[in-house]
Length: 613
Ligand code: F6R
Image (cartoon, rainbow, N blue to C red; front, side):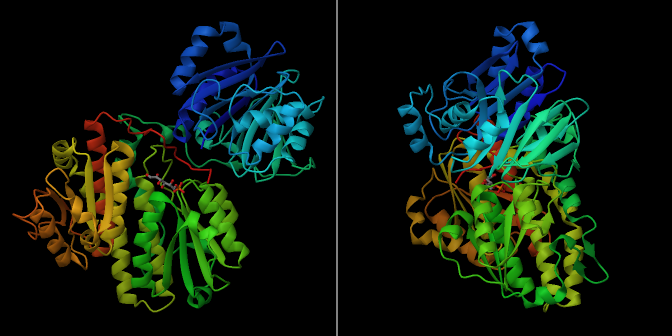
């Protein structure tokens, strides 16, 4: 949450910073700010709202000279934790004497105690933020060596941080540090970039250094020196980014979400490509680094995740039980770490996370590691913290996902979980015959996704009918139950319609009291085990006069004359239905949100990667 961009080099920093922030707006968009050092002064511009407001402010209030000749700067786009989203609370924040300035992503947990001490020492604070407390600490320790002051300040801090700091008497230097919040440094020719995510850097350079937790670095034009928080030199390797600037652009699409929904056939092709061994009827997932024997000896498979990634895990649970014959659990990551989970060396804990930065998922995997479990990751963002800390796992290769509502990551996660279940299953009791059928089904997933996208116009028409409703239920059974949860999550987060996903059988245990003509039900009546019972549940909804939008498989006439609207996803093997149905529900949510005039890519109160607990 929150995005940081910094630049030190020979070009005008403000434009580079603002353009970088635009790429990070998905991380937070309630306020934004920039600070540059120029003529031994710190100049700051901050605004409430989106980065465009900041760009306008700079354009109107900063001289041409300042905009083009200030070559060192830091910037921030905010998702508020401490203090309301306004101009005063926006970053960057100055220290007490105005000599240093700082942007921060994360939470300083002991900020109250630190602030009390600083107040007693005579400091005065302008904002309600924890970040300003950290800025004052840095200023307090700053004499002539900025990195020394940063290390000293950070040694007093509990919590998480990704920070970038400038000092007015060090016009050619930025100090950055991380613990729990990502920092990636881009190394160019005579210029250096820093950001919370490589998407803000990739247009300038593909050579990057990912800082580890506990790293601090001094950035100068084209040079990077990494140290530990104890200020001792340490080396970090330079990696090459595998995506280009275009993949983080909207292109001809109105929204990133639209682009990412329609990218799914390609994303799925990338996620699956080269990972099926049809001869051996299994999947090749070398990143798991496990021998068949190790796989066979596993006692339990536990997935930890949040939000959409957890819904993908819930689909995966069916796959692992049905195909890999393994005891499988899916845990809400935030809960897992604070319970006392009974896990040990024969259990594998898989963290599922698009961003690879979700604080609760990261903490859960650390807890599992400490308890001796094998840990692994299923991440999309290459080099992300979870991917690096787990050390083993599978990348999605879905390409950058910028829209705050996760779409292509979900379907790719489901596809990869299916391949993992196939692999573990083949190492255990799954027959070659079933393995071959699964390989064929999986290799057809991109084609099924393409066919599903052809339903766009029809789904849009249905969405138009329901765009004005205030409550919607999504119901399903078996493989379709987690997809109902995901459909409801997609709709609520981008359209602000109250939507709930339920097991179709559970409706009778309470929620049915809410059914009436103004409350439609999206019923997933696909050809998967449990379909007939779901049709019975649709009858119950109709008996309460709720309109029903049914999703069925191909030409199946099972709800003809019963449902008010029918979405017919392509006929597929049942294990693939979660993917096609999820795509149909993404389109449904997208079009409803569009009809309601919502800010689809940046829904209120949300941020793409949730790096705070
Ligand atoms: C919903 C959504 C969130 C994320 C959740 C986990 O559309 O995007 O629910 O799925 O915040 O994020 P990752 O997968 O990055 O760990």
